[in-house]
Length: 103
Image 1 (cartoon, rainbow, N blue to C red):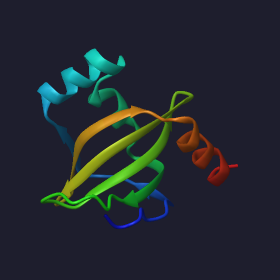
Image 2: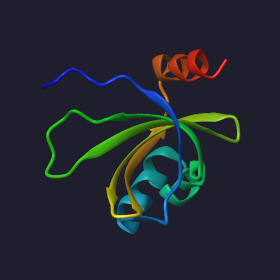
Image 3: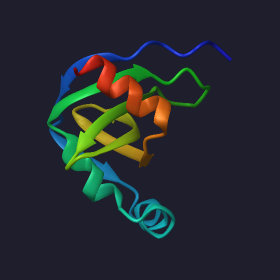
Image 4: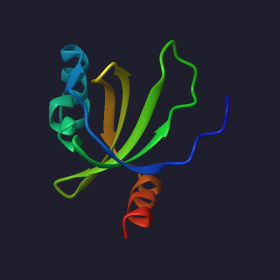
């Protein structure tokens, strides 16, 4: 597996945001929030990097803050549409990256 790319600070916006409602319900049951909630990081400033794991599509990892909580989101692009795949509350190292870049 290739090493992870570094995060870069970008303003990210999309024409629309989409996700699998079943996956969103799973995230809600496991993590206490759904994908519609974390989709609110867009449009906005995020830390983004290419996901170097092997998938049949190009995926991106994002660290972003929403109402005082730092989240990690994984998404793919389909034209101007953001297709959210999953999200979780950031781990301490991801939180540190967020504050290091944004302070």
